[in-house]
Image (tube, rainbow, N blue to C red; front, top):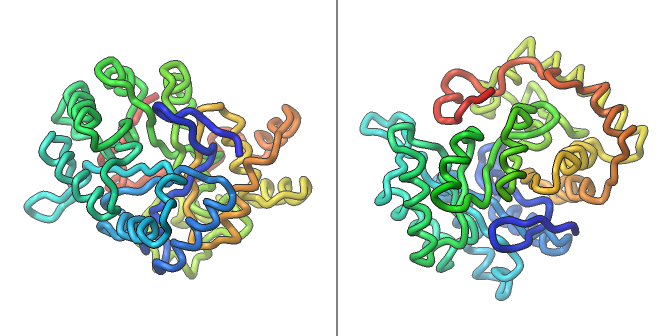
Length: 330
């Protein structure tokens, strides 16, 4: 398994997106999450990426139980979690980057996972009312306190990364990045490479669209996030399904799973890019990891760009409500 630099250590070039350890994309069980982690250890996948809000602590609790049940497993994984998303007095989504909130939430994460320190702690969403330099300082103090080894941010712009990094090294920035979402190439991929920051790519297979088993219209109704997402609403959903068929045919012609080809393309975009696909299926997880073994030629990349050119995806990647929090940039 190829390794990449993340903070002060080396991790596998693909990770486990542990949002799937909650019911976000459909019902799951703790045993199913354990099976994914067992497969990760078998395949040499060392990075596990979770958050305090995934299932309101359920994902972290599953990881913690796994680590308790399997002595020695902690040494096999580079564990990352996040905080910063909360609720206001009226129950509406809000963001809190204050020192007290971030430390308290990190303490809760450590307790749920039964560990003394996480390898990477991200701010899940920026609170625009707090200068990012102050937040970076807060994160640096958490490193000094021994509660995390490195720090990162999720869904921030390149300019914000540079400002934060000037105060404390930013080990990772998490952003949606895939053949369907190319916005990180407008400066974030480049800024991360320049600063030695890993770009952790979530939703690398376009929430199942870039696989051999894309989400069906029947399932969409039960998935609140996707059913409210413009790219999965008609007529965009059908248009995206039709466009991806060309990519699926290309993968079949190359003799590889569609998901593996999508991962291979992403890894080809930079040695610092770390995709973190989530899945509830061990078989699908193996397909995703198989993408790390595919070496694409320039001709392969050109053929991929021909069937899925920049800007091909129909619909915005978020609805107006879903866009609250992530930083837009161009």
